[in-house]
Length: 316
Image (cartoon, rainbow, N blue to C red; front, side, top):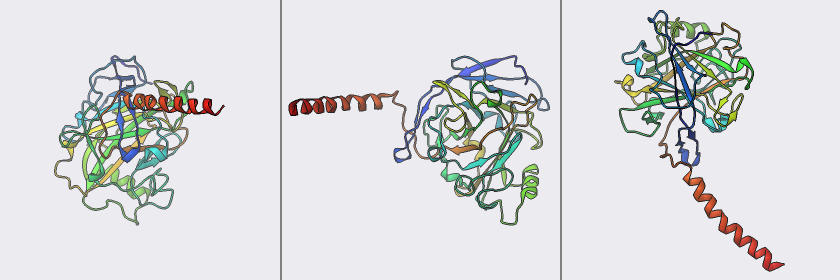
């Protein structure tokens, strides 16, 4: 595992409400960022494991294959709960050690291309107009914001070194037609990813696609209120500037590819448990209320409890 000469932290809390597909976001997490200086050949590492609480500048890579790619932000996040039924992923994949996944509804029932799983229900096609736009604090905006992609990593629990996972590449494409076909197979899909021929490349964590020089280290067991393991709380969110999608059509297919576990040099940063899953933020998130909604609900229930107690007393 690499050492870091600089580190920083950031907090972010998000509480999910599922009424009418609205979400509440509230900063809660300590985020750590570490960077290694160097050229694109050496690459950078973002460490979302170590550090103490406090706000710092967003965590990003200095280079990317797309113009302005350095504006893409990586952050630790802790959405609770984050089980599949609540999380609503569009990409699911699983493989021990190194794993890779790409979202498409094709590739077979259940098992898809590469290491895809749960096709097509939780691994499926996405159109650009399904994504919501948010600002850096995850509040909805009409333009000039970010598309947000959130990871729920399914690794072993606290105290186990296998709780760590490296995020070694993310590549996002758009295309007016479906970039996949029923005649595709793993080899064809891998070659097209290597050649960046799945559409217009909008963001890439590494250049070229065969490189893993830029990578992120996460702790899938980390939580502000204790610890967790497996699926149940999310682990990282990636904010990609909408400006990188200039010229894309609203109905264009969006293809999201990712690779994990390539930096498993110590035998503890690879995948070793259940499936990883990604979702995108959509709809209109509501403004954080600091917990006042729950406070008001609790206040409303108190009189009802007193009334019930009085009725029980009168019956006696």
